[in-house]
Amino acid sequence: MNQFDNWVGHVFFPSADSVILVDKFGQLEQKLKPLFGEPSNHDNPKDAGFMIDSFLNWCLFGFNLLGRGEWVHAGEVLRLVQDYLLRMVRVLEGSGSRWVAPTKLVEQEISADSYTRFQQGTAAVEPEAMSAAYWSAWEWGREMTAELAERHQLPRRQAFMDRLAGYFNSILSR
Image (cartoon, rainbow, N blue to C red):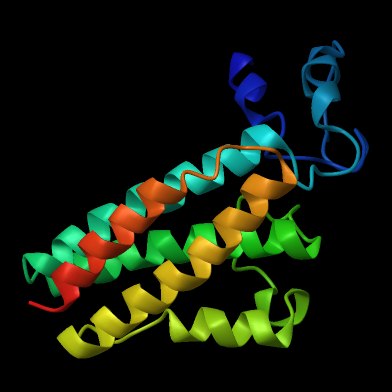
């Protein structure tokens, strides 16, 4: 039953009655107790730092794939970039509880402007469309990482972000 320890902060259940069918000795309820209640909104320094670092990591990986002409692989990585865009916008707009499945009900739960920005970061597996989607995702994500860093007093790393932007731009202009 130790696997439940890793679920804290990511999985929640409203109550024991809503999830446990049989627990003859009460051990399951005791183990699940930290998972009962309201979900986290993930609007905290630890999760903000994780989102920022993950977004940067996947962008760097994806842009490198574009530079090598690996369009299908870049499309797969773009999907991961999009997950972090959705996590960031959900936290910033107050619906961060959909951490495990950030795409769920996104059309209804993020603002129309954010949904439009998200759409601009999607593409068919075609060089020009992928390049445009990655750049759009990068620009929007960069704005959100700055907002999250400011909100949680995390380092902004402006010089690093500028160097990344220059590097990404050089890949797209080849």
